[in-house]
Amino acid sequence: MTFASRVLAGCRAVGNPIVVGIDPRIEMIPTALRASESKDRGGQAAVFRRFARELIDVVAGRVVAVKFQAAFYEALGLEGMAALRDGLAYARAAGLIVILDGKRNDIGSTAEAYAEGYLSARADDPHSAQTAPWPADALTINAYLGFDGVQPFLNAARATGNGVFALVRTSNPSAGQLQDLVAAGLPLYRHVADRLAQWAAPDRDDSGYSLLGAVVGATYPQQLAELREVLPGILFLVPGYGAQGGSARDVAAAFDDAGLGALVSSSRGLAFAHLRPDLSARHGPNWQRAVEDAVAEMADELAADTPAGRLRATRP
Amino acid sequence: MTFASRVLAGCRAVGNPIVVGIDPRIEMIPTALRASESKDRGGQAAVFRRFARELIDVVAGRVVAVKFQAAFYEALGLEGMAALRDGLAYARAAGLIVILDGKRNDIGSTAEAYAEGYLSARADDPHSAQTAPWPADALTINAYLGFDGVQPFLNAARATGNGVFALVRTSNPSAGQLQDLVAAGLPLYRHVADRLAQWAAPDRDDSGYSLLGAVVGATYPQQLAELREVLPGILFLVPGYGAQGGSARDVAAAFDDAGLGALVSSSRGLAFAHLRPDLSARHGPNWQRAVEDAVAEMADELAADTPAGRLRATRP
Image 1 (cartoon, each protein chain N blue to C red):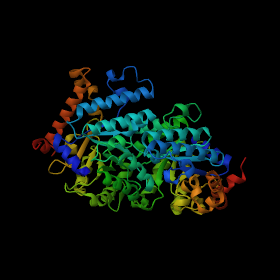
Image 2 (image 1 turned 180 degrees about the horizontal axis):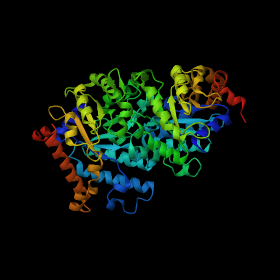
Image 3 (image 1 turned 45 degrees about the horizontal axis):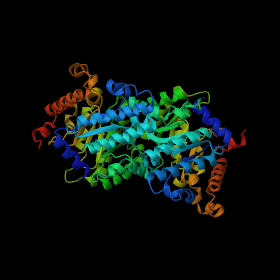
Image 4 (image 1 turned 90 degrees about the vertical axis):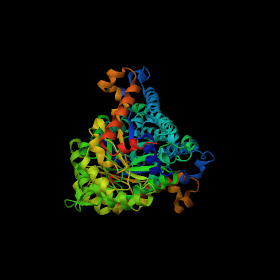
């Protein structure tokens, strides 16, 4: 089963396109999990590990995917990397699509090495998640280096049934400094998009989508609509929902008519839902119930205001 | 001592601007080091560790810096990351400037987390190399996300006396697909350069150089000259020498009049010098002697054909 087919099947099965972003920050993790063990890196990594596992226990079956932010684990050194590995494998075993947000980029054999690290767990072989260096289903990459920096990731993903998401338009305030520069009548992000369309085409499968997707921020709705138009066969990974300011209406244009084609990611708003005053008041120390409510709320918002509502209507 | 001052002092002390790229690939490592232990990831990581240490033993005092390619270590999972950590700390203890080539990129707290991981070892405190997650003196980054994706690295580097090199013009064949797109009369890489000049300016120190440097490939000599012209206060990290095709003449324009301002990196040509037929014939299994000769040869080439020759003439 191709990566795109797995993503679409996953969205249909859970009835929504939600990705839970796992960006662990020690000070935002529920107090009960922090206890006294978070004084040093090893202790913090143990907290990250437990937090990710308990978070995955809640969201498995409720959302299609989780997205691990590599940086927060790398910041904790070796102990952090061990916690990342544990989280990736645990999420995969729980049936979630596992995206590693590492924004890797390099060329030739170096890019091959990254792909070997992050895309070598075979989708059709559960055992390989035990043996792969970092068992992810997809990796985010940065395409500034051109096709030399993309092709090795595509080759690896194709061989293992995994996927790749390349940055096109990011969700941050200064994204436009380079991404909006206009060359030959089109902004840079459109040139990146045009390249992506070309690179993705050979890997479009029966679902109509390719194993090469695009990262497009939720905070720029017009660009999202424009990019959906010019990238019909490309899955969108849409960060920036919720805490970063993107609403359901903002991301509506990311979907195709069947309510597919986009994965919408929220990090703080879901994983750290216990920090919301209303949910904290409702659930107290039961932080997992706060996550449940926040996921249900986001699913309702997306169902009401985007074509993804069709997923719920047709859920098997 | 600022990062730029350390780099310049290092170049003066050794009399050359050479960076030895450490991009370990198991099949290229001298047979004697591979032995029987390279069958699995743990065994390969042990070989990487030993190879890096023995390579550093040879080049310390002969070159100014080493550059570790993160991808090859990440490909070996946790065991690889432990070998990377070992290599970084060993090279730092040997008095080399240690560059981690990770091309990281992200925004806000995520970029802060990468910086915490890779730039938190204090230059003025040898003990902090023992406690930092990954003790490097500089990290390569990708600036596609704009200043939000650069500032957290600068802040971290400033606090610890370390440095950052942002990709401007890469050395690969498809680099131009995006980097050469012309907006407002200038190619994209020039826009990146102009931003860099602006971002680097507040951190120019007495040496005239900033803690924010630029990665500019050796394989595009004209762009190198052009960029030296418009980026007077920016240290260049110049990959692509040797095996990738860049010659001493190609990189001559990267230097300032004193023969400073550029670090020239060669990976295969130095670290795997034992694979060169002439050096293999001369030294047989003594692969470290092949490295010595290759370093001396590159130093001679740079001294003959670039302003870096002045470093040798004025060596203390």
